[in-house]
Image (cartoon, rainbow, N blue to C red; front, side, top):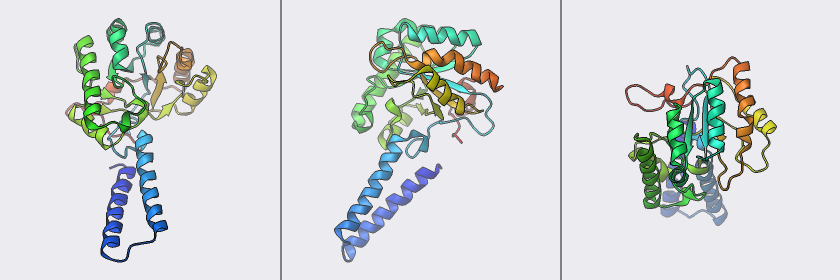
Length: 270
């Protein structure tokens, strides 16, 4: 069990004990109660915002201990131009990647999704609406969004997607539970280029990614901007990133190579 989840359960038990003690004996001061509440909410917020902690979801954030290679993943597509540019660069290096597509964009660019699969890459879901407040939605709305995204990808590709990256990387117990019920494995990342930002530069992206390149790394890049047609810096940086991977004597490994043959689930990250 991830350390952050152990901390979460311990903190929850502590808050329950604190509440029961306060109800049965003398109530603590307002300042003490406020401090306990603040610390607990702060812990929950960290768990929701930082997927790498795996506080709520058994997310794949890196490969298993014996992993070899680097997994490339792309978010926020498909885009009719930028995604195809990424595909061409990947072909040049014989590299395979995983594309976490936004449902409504997949509907608009079905041909690009088909092209992703035709070239031997994997398609996961990144939500249908890609709402920034996804982690604040109720269970029905979360389920409807994910079911719609899964149905879109399955209709286009003929195969039900197994992987899910939460929008913005935020999660909570509701999202984790519904993903599990829909047989979706949550996927995070170990190194990101921050290339989704409008201010990002290709040089900066290459530098950030290079520092995290090692066996078992899951790299987060973008093949499309969250909104509009801006070209993410990661697309421009991709060729240099692949050169860095080769220079470190690493290889690009599809996430599917880290699938467990029996359960078809991804191993826990390190």
